[in-house]
Image 1 (cartoon, helix red, strand yellow):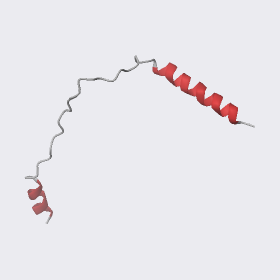
Image 2: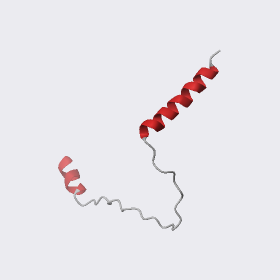
Image 3: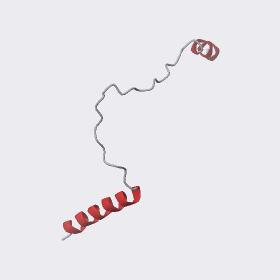
Image 4: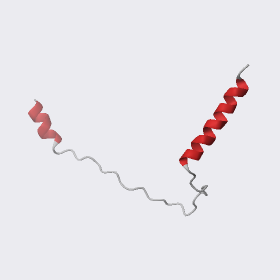
Length: 56
C-alpha cells in the first residue's frame, strides 16, 4: 500500500512560487531606515513612561 502511494506521488507536481511583480507605478513614501537600537530605545522609553504614569 505504501509503495502504491509512493509511486502515485511521483506524478504530482508541486507548483513553484512565482516572484511577485509590483504593478503599481506609485510607491508609498517611506521614512529613512533608522538604527534598530535607537528605535528599540525609543519604544522602551515610551513603554516605561506609560507604565510609570499608570502606577498609583
